[in-house]
Length: 136
Image 1 (cartoon, helix red, strand yellow):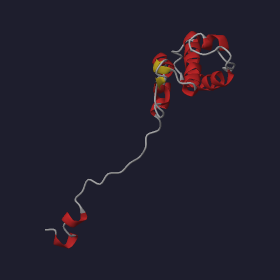
Image 2 (cartoon, helix red, strand yellow; image 1 turned 30 degrees about the vertical axis):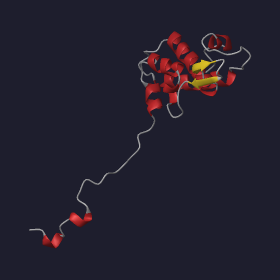
Image 3 (cartoon, one colour; image 1 turned 180 degrees about the vertical axis):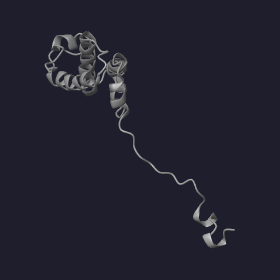
């Protein structure tokens, strides 16, 4: 599907110099928003809401590469950046906003990732076990 947002619309919510090509971020956001739209079998997301989800996802993808400052000081030349790797969509405010607007829960499920199987032995250690022949 064609992109729902323009570069200018994404630039309206992100802090950048205005020269960055937003096309790759919009393309990624569009693909993900199309997935959300496809899985919305009940049709609860309006076109306007899908557009906002796409805009915030594009801003998220941009911000993931050009992290915003959480704090900075000019004379001391120090700064700390927002988010952490591995947080997926929770990493930026834009990703969090997109998940909030997605009433289907698709983005939250994608953010959570696939469940991983694990196994845990709940029995006794081998040295504490009773041999089969000794059981009464």
